[in-house]
Length: 312
Image (tube, rainbow, N blue to C red):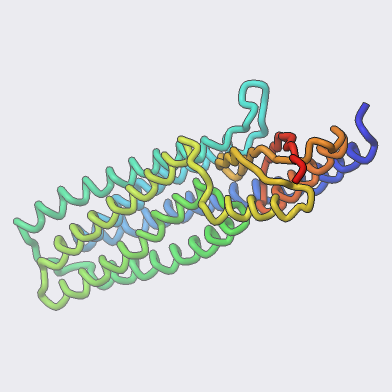
């Protein structure tokens, strides 16, 4: 029969964690909705600008925004699935759906870069003067930058609160959108002054940058899917916290990973063999909660190992 103090501690921990989880889920869903709405709005505006100017750099950012919609919808579905609680068939939850979404987004981003490269190279060898719609196109690109900045401000807030991989990936390609839109504005301004080759040259530079960003998303997603360890500084914080306990004699086999918004920590705690089972359990239980408090959402498992102290 469990000790009443232990049951009270479990009840208190659940009552503290539940509102936090609901708040994080709400923020992540709102971020995905905002991303989809922003992408659709930008597609409509850029389609109008491209129709007027026939600029390949405007087409580049139109293609990018079109794929943003698909990526954001995929992200929205993945986040919804990742936030589902653990069930009988998925004991560790569904957090890795976020990493799969990150891989999917990187494919969309790389695809947009490939289409852009083909269009830009073709225009590089067959330059065309842009004489119409440049002023309207400039206004549309400035509007795109303002809308993207507003979305990224909200996304960065959500990332700070949730550390969501899917929202990070979404925010990353919107960050590239800022540079893309800035490059397009530069191309349009130079075209107004007779520098017509600036349009395809800047479009090629944008495509290469998009490919670089896609690789960053791929690497982070694969690390999470392969249960990559937490950064060394976070592992050191865990070790330092454990060793601060006056009865901890050491630790070994520290294992960490992240799945979605949840951090998983396992370690072997070395304790004096003269401690009773209840005393060892209470020490381990206290350390589990202290380690969990280092993160917004964590599951910690500590195995106690008895250590024999030989007489001096």
